[in-house]
Length: 133
Image 1 (cartoon, rainbow, N blue to C red):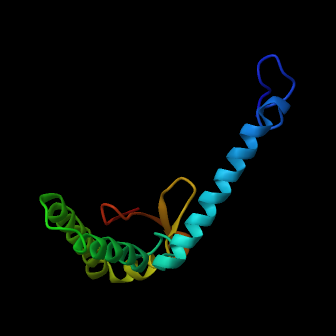
Image 2 (cartoon, rainbow, N blue to C red):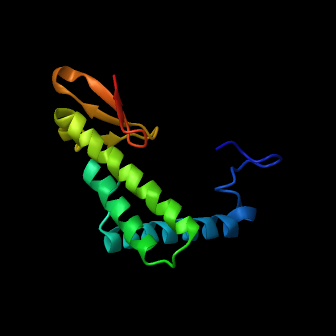
């Protein structure tokens, strides 16, 4: 990080910002602990495979079914069903790629990619459920 204006230190090392940085580190640790706790409680490993996406949709559906009937609940359930249908379509229309998709990795850029035989890669858009080269 570049030094602060009129200082030889960056914000992370500036003595006058020590309390702020300590609080930021504390909050970051809390977020990571909470993330691990929730992942364990909901048995979610990530969003890199069809099975993991189906698990998240199942949790969302169960939470929605526990709510009172409302127009918003109905719309949300329809959206969950639509996403589940797209996942099933991917599995049905691309069985060999669906198997590869089970081993997809979401990179730091947020794009899911699979490695196909011959060293080719395929970009997968889980939201649109489309495979592109």
